[in-house]
Length: 265
Image (cartoon, rainbow, N blue to C red; front, side, top):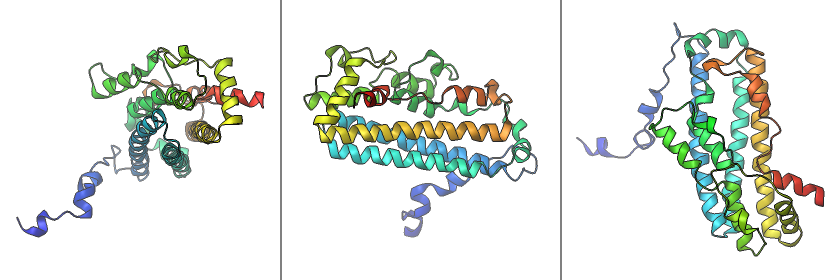
């Protein structure tokens, strides 16, 4: 082996050969548009990996009371969300006929089976037994999601940040069972409104969280319209209800206390 063979290169560092071998269309031909479909969804999964990495960092920074480092990390997550939304524009260049040219080759595969997206939902606060259903017990994805469902959410970490800054977060909220769905409360809503009025650094963090909430809702909306545009009201692959289920997730805020606090200003 020569020194040239051993030298780190762009391709070897990024595993380009392996990366470019992962797109395997299943349609005959294959159909031209299937490659785009695969690349977009593989890219989504890479961005989900990055978001989970950054969210873990953000939670650590918040719980350490590091305002400005947390702001920078939350800002990065917000920018990634904008990229996720923009990728819908690319998918929408595919017409219904183009998608249907290979749709039957997807068999039972569905975006509902994205383990990383379920993990993201857990970090953002969703708690529901159905989140583990698509994944085989004992599998790596099942373990990851199950673990996320037992850890503090991003909102739990934010409440600890507020407590560090001497805001009177109720002890029962700080010590709550994080495996259970968080329920907004008048007490926390009032505390949030007070933090906005009296703590500029806290208000910056809270506004950045609201940016993430809006970004997630925008992504869900664009996803719904893209599905409706492509398959109408037909059922999705994998037995999902397609656009009907996705529409049911719209306009459900992640950080309800932040939105409720607007009524107190």
